[in-house]
Length: 174
Image 1 (tube, rainbow, N blue to C red):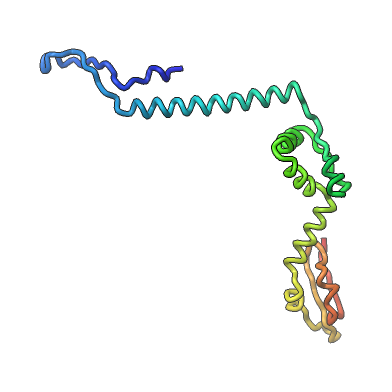
Image 2: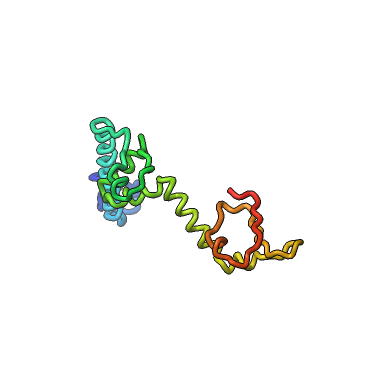
């Protein structure tokens, strides 16, 4: 647009004819080359951004995707409760699927409630090891070994492996 107006040599008019004898000078603008290159880079980035916006608009109006189905992910993983997504989320997953379909399949697993439960249980088992549970063992008033768990998101699998446990007290278990 105005990039061609950036010049290295600029005509200067200075009212000093009495002192120098000249009225017009050719001045050098030392940063003109740098400004020119920066302006060209900016215009290139602006062009790429504009093309991306135009592609998005084209896709939105000519190939609208209102719903994205994880049918192939359901068949591949065997997880049947992966929900289909709609609107903007569907558009984003479609673009990810176009880039690499493995990403969308991996992401589909996290949308399943069954796999979410399994991940929470794995995290709980990792956090509450057998050693940590044995540190929580106490002798109650009737002389029995008791484990008191408070506000946990679930019951760790290692509690079933503790043979020495005689009483289990759970409070506010989710």
